[in-house]
Length: 308
Image (cartoon, rainbow, N blue to C red; front, side, top):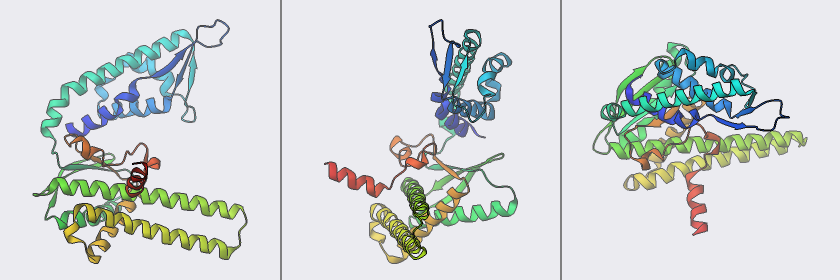
């Protein structure tokens, strides 16, 4: 794991290291503190011990143990005063340590980062055959935007564990390629969410005991709608970034890119902009902590026009 990647992960988790709790002063209460959103806190905690384990000392770990050992099915924890104060003390100490470390490495991380780069994280890969297949899908996903603007992709860093690759985009239009890739990833997520909504609707139809021919009709309509949606997303990206190269062939290529990103997302792949990227570029990438909230940018633009 290189410094830019560590910096990105830790800064993204810093807000979740602020432990949320309520203190009860009524004497008739059976407990003194209730801690909430502990699933988010545990996720941030595990990110710290994965990427900067030296920031967690034994005393702090002991204080936080009641939170960390709480079952994953629970999002709250009630404690007495002594345990609660220990958790709060440990959480504050850990957050301060991470905050100081992030501030310390920030100039080094930014100096080592490439502005036009993308971090790609693969999770569900267990053997070399699967790795080769996934890398080929990534190459095909990137082919259309990179090729059309005469760019190339270089691997800057590969890390073990969950495989994390930093891809640097090279070329006169590297920043535009990154923006296109971000939009293709966003489109793939939006199409995936639309497919999930269609599946829910179909399953609901089954509960209503609709006839098979009616269900088949609904499935065909959903399939057609998804295909048209994918075509619209691809055409929108071409119109925005490559209006002079608007052709049926490019439409096919960009639809194929969306398909490849969809396949990678299905395998648990995650995509992040460089920590050095401009804020407007970072906003083009979907939030991988809230993928189910991602909607088509075409829909968002249309709604914006309706409101204006």
